Length: 199
Ligand SMILES: CC(C)(COP(=O)(O)OP(=O)(O)OC[C@H]1O[C@@H](n2cnc3c(N)ncnc32)[C@H](O)[C@@H]1OP(=O)(O)O)[C@@H](O)C(=O)NCCC(=O)NCCS
Image (cartoon, rainbow, N blue to C red; front, side, top):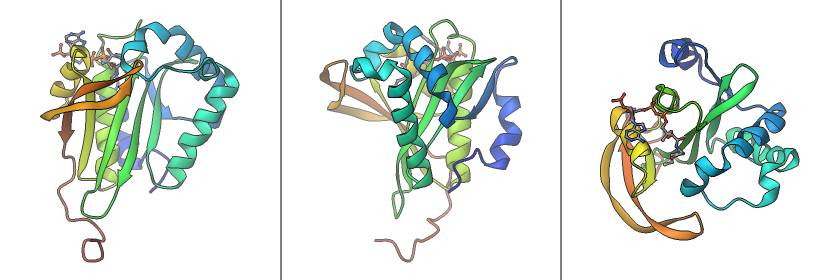
């Protein structure tokens, strides 16, 4: 599994992303702009994320986060792409928890800068992620939203995700275990590449 946006996805990105923005791979050199983006958006993201330690908002903290994400990509566990507005990063989408065998599933997480919402960017990020999952021959992409995150639920519905149920105390978000609505989209229907070998 390549860490880069697959060629088929790369070719279609401009038609998915609103004019003036670019989706590109997360890079080891992004620590400073990522730290700035998270500092700008700390209040906007706080209700939907784990409580971040102070170090998370520093360049060295982001260097560690990015190093881990890039290692996950190398190991085939996921991938992460950023939404760029010139030099600034104004959003991100991440595929994680890739499980192969008979599951062929992964999780998706995403955010858009509070000053850039309502322009179709969240939808664009999800489309890029789902197209990438399809190119990786992943059958399923799962998303989980806090019950009151209506913006996220609206984006998922628009992007063809189906609500599959509610999980009690599912993730430790904003300092407590919170119930989540779970969604899935099935971008790839072929059999697992290693179907005969998997359990
Ligand atoms: C959720 C989030 C990514 C949405 O990004 P966005 O760029 O505003 O989304 P889009 O512009 O693509 O909107 C897609 C659809 O959702 C709808 N929508 C977006 N925000 C909404 C809101 N607050 N209430 C109702 N509908 C909303 C839009 O109207 C649009 O539907 P339409 O095209 O039929 O009008 C953004 O609000 C965000 O980053 N929130 C904080 C982080 C977060 O919640 N991440 C997800 C965790 S599960």
